[in-house]
Length: 249
Image 1 (cartoon, rainbow, N blue to C red):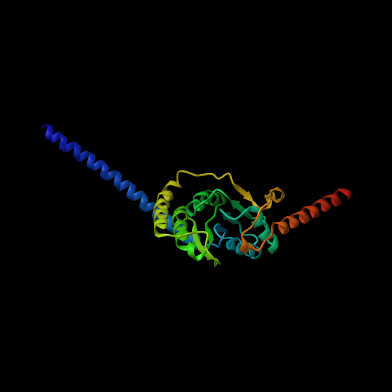
Image 2: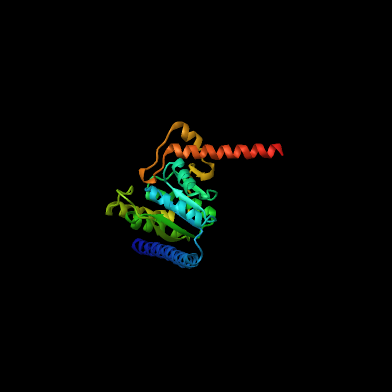
């Protein structure tokens, strides 16, 4: 009698577990189909944001040139160079800075997507162009496709050649570990939304303070801190004169 009750109890538990498993798999299938349709649609839409990964100032040199060609497309630089160096690059190219944002919370490739995903979602981004370098490409692309792709964002790559030793050192172990935690975060990002307190608009950067404290840029940028500070002083002087001129009127 007791044995029969145990058998029936076990059968009920099995049925409940099977129903639960079926529900999870069904939900996953529905999500996969829906996300695939969203990604196909996003792939056909125009690029609406450039996402630049830090690690080489050559990428920022390149994006400063791109900004001149596509001034209306937002640019998000994650874990990039020192603020005044980026200001100097855009200043040298005479590129618009109104739609350029800097995110300085990320200290790794995984961190790049961990912290930029909430920003991209807030902006309603569907199609990004990921700016990185050849040596960094496989890991960066896989992580982007997993984390951003799981949130309906299509990823297209834009490769910038490097000179010298790359800032991002690659290994199979590092790539494997990053891919694994990205798979977990593809799910976790649906529930948790990390915030970065170090997100700034490029046009709001206070280079004057940097000039007082002193700074230097990567050699490949071919930028001198004094030339950047001089350019900023000229810009501020021009603004001051225009402001005084308006007051006189």
